[in-house]
Image: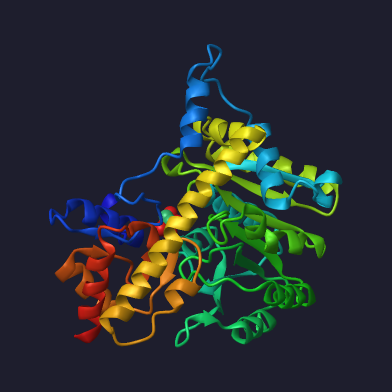
Length: 401
Ligand code: LMR
């Protein structure tokens, strides 16, 4: 029957990484996947992660036994505290639960599977236009009808709040809305606190269910608490919600696949019911989650000294990215590249939504060996002091063609 199986298209993001790796040009640049690189263009193992690994590996009692189905309890507690805040009323009221997942993708997937089973039948899922490509894959895969809400104004590359509110208002009552907690992927455009309040008002009036995706906590403002503001605000406003937390980016643990689906319910009994079903879903999909990355994250989140060091490591990453935003903008201005480039420094997180068109992106790839997604998203983490002038020159030439 294999003859009946159609060929699926390659994944847009990981296919770029493969093309980049296969490219033999010395000055090639990968601005595709959202993965941090240091100023030499190398992957960065966070010093705090190295320390946690050293401690783990020197523990004579370290074993490789199965973990509980919902994951390592100290990881779940640490993740909930990180996103909700140590003083969270929901935590004090014991109405927060969760499950460890295969990074942020797994958290989205587990949440989607849960909602497909238990949320009201026929509910729509709303994702931002544009969004991370995997959102659509995951929610369509779970059987949902997926619609888009307006998010960014394509001419100014800033938030289209009116468009967003109009989309949320016209969606059927009780839709599931995927919100990026911070550092929106791919645009790098986040609502302000006042804008979040208006979004929450509409979500409340329309009884929509907020499903936050939080893959970049610490990368937006460099402050993990500030980056959790929107989620904490929605909790204060009394929403039940999901948060998909990834520790791939903020711990540099991409391949270890450590994430958590954190759930805030209205009371402890409901949290327990949800948790029991999440465990059932996890048991039938992954049985129980991988231990290594989770042990590292759990150790760092629960040790005050390591935690402080982690915040410092995070600042190293987010400030280098911010510097690269300035460098690229300055180079483009210096070259007199047609267009305006201030949005590169105003956008936040790991990405810039450059405004480059698909044909311009293709020129960068084909003529300059610079790889980025067709929608003009650039992973700023791929820029460094050795390649930013080259990239700016290439953009300049592509824009003038
Ligand atoms: C990205 O958007 O580049 C990252 O989140 C990697 C991924 O899983 O797509």
